[in-house]
Amino acid sequence: MTIELGRLGAYLITAEAATEDAVALEEAGYGAIWLAASPTADLLPAERLLDATNRIVVGTSVINVWQENAEEVADSYHRIAGKHPGRLLIGIGAGHREVNADYASPVAKIASYLDALTAAGVPAERVLLAALGPKMLRLAGDRAAGTITLQVTPEHTRLARQALGPGKLVVPGHGVVLDTDAERAREAGRAVVRPILGIANYANNLRRIGYTDEDLTDPYSDRLIDALVLHGDATAIAAGIDAELAAGANHVGVYAAGEDVIGVLQAIAEAARVEKALRT
Image (cartoon, rainbow, N blue to C red):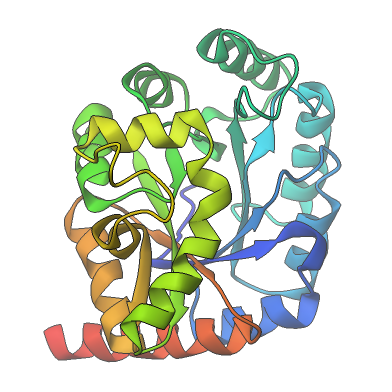
């Protein structure tokens, strides 16, 4: 069974994801909700959102393989997929040396985690890997449905598409700031990416695609912030999403900064609908 994601997804913090938000996002036309901030193996937040909705896909972005037991994840997958076939995706990732005390050989750890999921009957086409570098991208192409990434650029998306080929999912995620004041929006964007850019895996990935130490030194260059955090009015943000799709993404997840997260996401969905109508 193919999972239909559509072009646009929404990130919600797992602990804050409410059923009424999921319903509103489904009504706005989102194809998927991505649960951020290391969901736990019981997948209860995903189950709750799926129970409250009719069509939208829910995915994890991402389960930390150093913290969550693969067999428990598999049991949760089967419990939920039995009720909601074709609507659950399992995104997994190897975490980061800075935050995981047991961090070592991430590719080997992900491969063994995939072995456990496969042995427990979780289909490979329902699993996505958080893959930035070439070795993890190769594993995503060989052993999973594709890759889900956060805070990347169209340049990285093109590389991911080349590495995975045409038949796999490439799902980048972006922060978004709905604000037409460029300087204010960039400052908000810096707050979004600052915790991420202090992590070596993310910074090294950005160096691979051409960003420099100057770009990556706090307070970070405008060109880096503009690439990582889409900002402006809803139409400008929709254009940034289109750039990712043109670079080879199947689907783009957006993480809205600010107090009215759902309102921002609804405005972006409407602008994306208008842009699509204008093109057709």
